[in-house]
Amino acid sequence: MSNENKIRILYVQPGKYPEEQFIANELHPLQRLVGGYMQAVYPCSKVKVALVCNDSGKVDGLPLNRCIEDYDVIAGNFFICGFSGEKFCTSCYPRKCVPACLPCAA
Image (cartoon, rainbow, N blue to C red; front, top):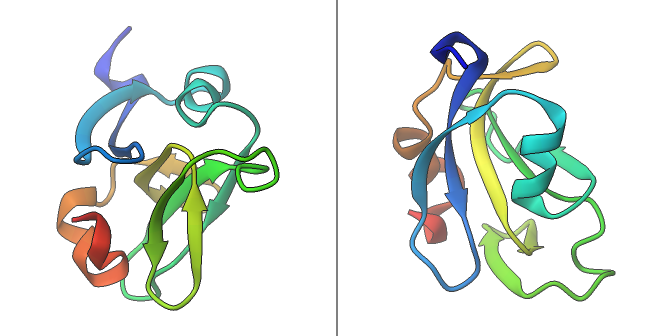
């Protein structure tokens, strides 16, 4: 697979340090990372980053992972990536953007 079909993400698992990865920008590989259907939230108005998590992580009893400032707690694995319109992309280097939006994940 060529690099043009991949995006750079910051992958965050409960109890582990975030890790940078390149992943195919396709539905099934992205769903495997979060363990099911995906939900994207946009925790920061300063930069175009999406936090993508399992849509039913809390209901399914996945382990709590990180907090998003005063907003919420994410359960299960999630990843952070850039977005453009309705598509995920590598427009923003996630590790640079995370401290402004998700201080406890950096």
